[in-house]
Image (tube, rainbow, N blue to C red; front, top):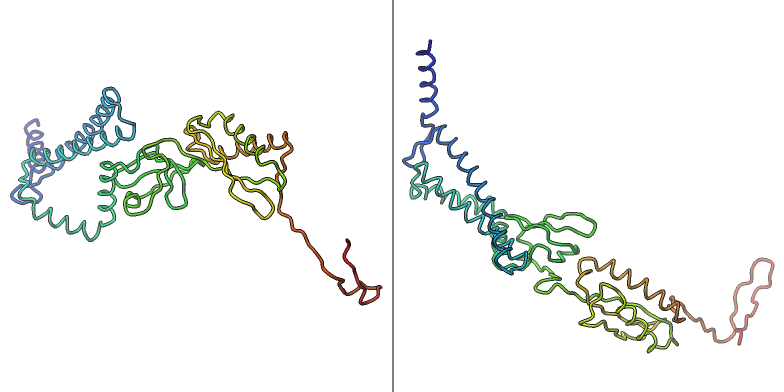
Length: 305
């Protein structure tokens, strides 16, 4: 009985090692395919661990910003993955020179069928190398303003202030125009336009608005806030308050709202009027209009003095 079981086990093992096909001069069996899968899993785990270790060491021994640390750690993980893949092929007995034809056919297929994927992957490598954007940057892509939360091999994830994550292909950051509000310098200048009524004391408006800007806890002292007299509008004197901030660089809408609330309170306190659109109608000479039902036609109306 034991001999029969041993014979069946040997038969199954021989079937498991039986070549299914050849890659060049190398036979490929089920056993080799299983070994390759196991090696790939091990390589993936080692790549992830090396990325974490590299990121931890960069934080400990360098003063690089978080975006650069993430870029270096990701690049290191990709290198470990590539080297491990080539080593796995060598361990399994593949002659890499014999794979030249397969690699050429694969490259041709990538060129025609996977153009966008390859483009996005190469764009991701360029982003990691040149770092036009980094994790934590505030960017404007099209009409969307959001924070960069992840840079992947194929795409980049950005999160809006409404907590909506948008997946953007990496090629858009390379081939299209992208506004990076915090590239190289985290502070930004936020503009708050407003208007006051004609007849207001513009020097008082200047003093009050600048006091409001300096009093905001998120406003920077250096560079200081500034007020610009934009011009004479149809019904208002137009100004633009400019305030530098770092804390609210990712929340400009909330920052403007807080400034507007403070301006309203300050203008109410100092009797500075905020105008609304209005038109003055001047009538010259008498007018003749149709009288309402029951009245006499052709009544003349004279303008009041």
